[in-house]
Amino acid sequence: MSLKQIIKKSEKIKIIATDVDGVLTEGYVFIRDNHEEPFGKFNILDGLAIKLAHAGGLRVVVVSGRKSLATEARCQKLGIDLTYTGVSDKQLKLREIAEETGVLPDEIAYVGDDLIDLPAMVIAGFTCAPANAVHEVKRHVDYVSPVFGGNGVLRDVVELILKAQNKYQAIVAEYLQIK
Image 1 (spheres, rainbow, N blue to C red):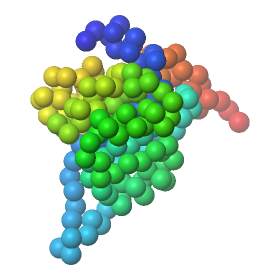
Image 2 (image 1 turned 90 degrees about the vertical axis):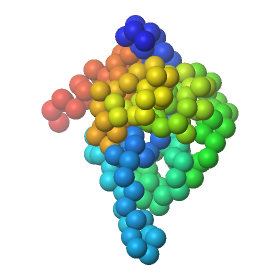
Image 3 (image 1 turned 30 degrees about the horizontal axis):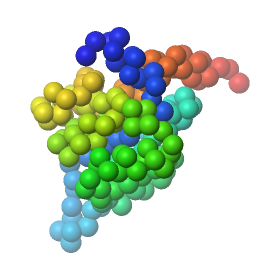
Image 4 (image 1 turned 120 degrees about the vertical axis):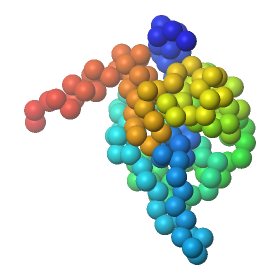
Protein backbone atom coordinates (compact mmCIF):
# COMPACT_ATOMS: atom_id res chain seq x y z
CA MET A 1 0.00 0.00 0.00
CA SER A 2 1.33 3.43 -0.89
CA LEU A 3 2.09 6.10 1.71
CA LYS A 4 -0.72 8.21 0.25
CA GLN A 5 -3.22 5.37 0.82
CA ILE A 6 -1.91 4.79 4.35
CA ILE A 7 -2.36 8.48 5.16
CA LYS A 8 -5.88 8.50 3.71
CA LYS A 9 -6.90 5.52 5.86
CA SER A 10 -5.19 6.98 8.95
CA GLU A 11 -6.96 10.33 8.67
CA LYS A 12 -10.32 8.94 9.75
CA ILE A 13 -9.11 6.82 12.70
CA LYS A 14 -10.72 7.51 16.08
CA ILE A 15 -9.76 4.34 17.96
CA ILE A 16 -6.59 2.27 17.93
CA ALA A 17 -7.23 -1.32 18.99
CA THR A 18 -4.23 -3.49 19.68
CA ASP A 19 -3.36 -7.05 20.54
CA VAL A 20 -0.90 -7.53 23.41
CA ASP A 21 1.31 -10.62 23.05
CA GLY A 22 3.62 -10.03 20.11
CA VAL A 23 2.61 -6.37 19.77
CA LEU A 24 2.93 -4.67 23.16
CA THR A 25 5.25 -7.46 24.29
CA GLU A 26 7.85 -9.56 22.52
CA GLY A 27 5.42 -12.45 22.71
CA TYR A 28 7.03 -14.35 25.56
CA VAL A 29 4.91 -15.62 28.44
CA PHE A 30 6.62 -16.24 31.78
CA ILE A 31 4.97 -18.92 33.91
CA ARG A 32 6.09 -20.10 37.35
CA ASP A 33 6.07 -23.79 38.22
CA ASN A 34 2.88 -23.20 40.24
CA HIS A 35 1.21 -22.05 36.99
CA GLU A 36 1.14 -18.40 38.03
CA GLU A 37 2.02 -15.68 35.59
CA PRO A 38 4.45 -13.54 37.59
CA PHE A 39 4.87 -10.54 35.29
CA GLY A 40 4.68 -9.11 31.80
CA LYS A 41 7.36 -7.16 29.97
CA PHE A 42 6.09 -4.02 28.24
CA ASN A 43 8.01 -1.32 26.36
CA ILE A 44 7.91 2.18 27.85
CA LEU A 45 7.70 3.71 24.35
CA ASP A 46 4.26 2.16 24.00
CA GLY A 47 3.30 3.61 27.38
CA LEU A 48 3.91 7.15 26.16
CA ALA A 49 2.15 6.25 22.91
CA ILE A 50 -1.08 5.99 24.90
CA LYS A 51 -0.62 9.52 26.25
CA LEU A 52 0.18 10.81 22.75
CA ALA A 53 -2.90 9.13 21.33
CA HIS A 54 -5.09 10.66 24.04
CA ALA A 55 -3.53 14.09 23.45
CA GLY A 56 -4.52 13.70 19.80
CA GLY A 57 -8.09 12.76 20.65
CA LEU A 58 -7.69 9.05 19.91
CA ARG A 59 -8.92 6.28 22.16
CA VAL A 60 -6.85 3.14 22.74
CA VAL A 61 -8.36 -0.30 23.24
CA VAL A 62 -6.64 -3.58 24.09
CA VAL A 63 -8.07 -6.81 22.68
CA SER A 64 -6.03 -9.80 23.83
CA GLY A 65 -6.72 -13.46 23.25
CA ARG A 66 -5.02 -14.40 26.50
CA LYS A 67 -6.41 -13.67 29.95
CA SER A 68 -3.62 -11.93 31.84
CA LEU A 69 -3.56 -10.08 35.16
CA ALA A 70 -0.26 -8.46 34.18
CA THR A 71 -1.84 -7.07 31.00
CA GLU A 72 -4.89 -5.83 32.87
CA ALA A 73 -2.72 -4.11 35.49
CA ARG A 74 -0.52 -2.44 32.86
CA CYS A 75 -3.52 -1.25 30.85
CA GLN A 76 -5.12 0.22 33.94
CA LYS A 77 -1.92 2.02 34.91
CA LEU A 78 -1.57 3.46 31.39
CA GLY A 79 -5.15 4.70 31.29
CA ILE A 80 -6.10 2.58 28.30
CA ASP A 81 -9.72 3.34 27.48
CA LEU A 82 -11.03 -0.24 27.23
CA THR A 83 -9.26 -3.50 28.01
CA TYR A 84 -10.49 -6.94 26.98
CA THR A 85 -8.46 -10.06 27.75
CA GLY A 86 -9.36 -13.68 27.10
CA VAL A 87 -11.09 -12.76 23.83
CA SER A 88 -11.48 -15.71 21.45
CA ASP A 89 -13.49 -13.90 18.74
CA LYS A 90 -11.70 -10.63 18.05
CA GLN A 91 -13.93 -9.68 15.12
CA LEU A 92 -17.03 -9.90 17.31
CA LYS A 93 -15.28 -7.90 20.04
CA LEU A 94 -14.26 -5.21 17.53
CA ARG A 95 -17.87 -4.97 16.33
CA GLU A 96 -19.01 -4.64 19.96
CA ILE A 97 -16.41 -1.92 20.57
CA ALA A 98 -17.61 0.00 17.51
CA GLU A 99 -21.20 -0.21 18.71
CA GLU A 100 -20.32 0.66 22.32
CA THR A 101 -18.23 3.70 21.35
CA GLY A 102 -20.39 4.90 18.48
CA VAL A 103 -17.68 4.70 15.84
CA LEU A 104 -17.72 2.84 12.56
CA PRO A 105 -15.41 -0.16 12.16
CA ASP A 106 -13.53 1.72 9.42
CA GLU A 107 -12.69 4.40 12.02
CA ILE A 108 -10.78 1.80 14.03
CA ALA A 109 -7.14 0.92 13.46
CA TYR A 110 -6.12 -2.57 14.53
CA VAL A 111 -2.58 -3.70 15.37
CA GLY A 112 -1.97 -7.45 15.48
CA ASP A 113 0.69 -10.03 14.78
CA ASP A 114 -0.86 -13.49 14.48
CA LEU A 115 -3.66 -15.42 12.79
CA ILE A 116 -6.11 -14.83 15.66
CA ASP A 117 -5.99 -11.11 14.72
CA LEU A 118 -6.99 -11.57 11.07
CA PRO A 119 -10.78 -11.70 11.65
CA ALA A 120 -10.67 -8.30 13.40
CA MET A 121 -8.45 -6.94 10.64
CA VAL A 122 -11.04 -7.86 8.02
CA ILE A 123 -13.41 -5.20 9.38
CA ALA A 124 -10.98 -2.56 10.71
CA GLY A 125 -10.42 0.59 8.70
CA PHE A 126 -6.63 0.58 9.00
CA THR A 127 -4.57 -2.49 9.84
CA CYS A 128 -1.01 -2.71 11.09
CA ALA A 129 1.48 -5.35 12.14
CA PRO A 130 4.93 -5.36 13.75
CA ALA A 131 7.93 -6.28 11.62
CA ASN A 132 8.07 -9.75 13.19
CA ALA A 133 4.40 -10.63 12.69
CA VAL A 134 3.64 -13.94 11.02
CA HIS A 135 3.83 -13.89 7.24
CA GLU A 136 0.08 -14.28 6.62
CA VAL A 137 -0.71 -11.26 8.78
CA LYS A 138 1.92 -9.09 7.08
CA ARG A 139 0.39 -10.07 3.71
CA HIS A 140 -3.04 -8.79 4.76
CA VAL A 141 -2.32 -5.52 6.56
CA ASP A 142 -2.17 -1.96 5.29
CA TYR A 143 1.05 -1.12 7.14
CA VAL A 144 3.93 -3.25 8.40
CA SER A 145 5.87 -1.28 10.97
CA PRO A 146 9.66 -1.51 10.82
CA VAL A 147 9.52 -2.04 14.61
CA PHE A 148 9.33 -5.48 16.23
CA GLY A 149 6.61 -6.34 18.73
CA GLY A 150 7.57 -5.39 22.27
CA ASN A 151 9.92 -2.70 21.00
CA GLY A 152 7.58 0.24 20.49
CA VAL A 153 5.43 -0.82 17.53
CA LEU A 154 2.34 0.84 19.02
CA ARG A 155 4.33 4.06 19.35
CA ASP A 156 5.21 3.87 15.66
CA VAL A 157 1.57 3.36 14.68
CA VAL A 158 0.29 6.14 16.96
CA GLU A 159 2.83 8.60 15.55
CA LEU A 160 1.95 7.61 11.98
CA ILE A 161 -1.77 8.19 12.61
CA LEU A 162 -1.23 11.47 14.47
CA LYS A 163 1.02 12.74 11.67
CA ALA A 164 -1.59 11.78 9.06
CA GLN A 165 -4.17 13.72 11.08
CA ASN A 166 -1.82 16.75 11.36
CA LYS A 167 -1.82 16.53 15.18
CA TYR A 168 1.65 15.24 15.94
CA GLN A 169 3.65 18.48 15.65
CA ALA A 170 1.32 20.34 18.04
CA ILE A 171 1.71 17.54 20.59
CA VAL A 172 5.51 17.63 20.28
CA ALA A 173 5.41 21.44 20.61
CA GLU A 174 3.73 21.01 24.00
CA TYR A 175 6.72 18.99 25.18
CA LEU A 176 9.08 21.74 23.99
CA GLN A 177 7.40 24.53 25.94
CA ILE A 178 9.36 26.07 28.78
CA LYS A 179 7.29 26.40 31.93
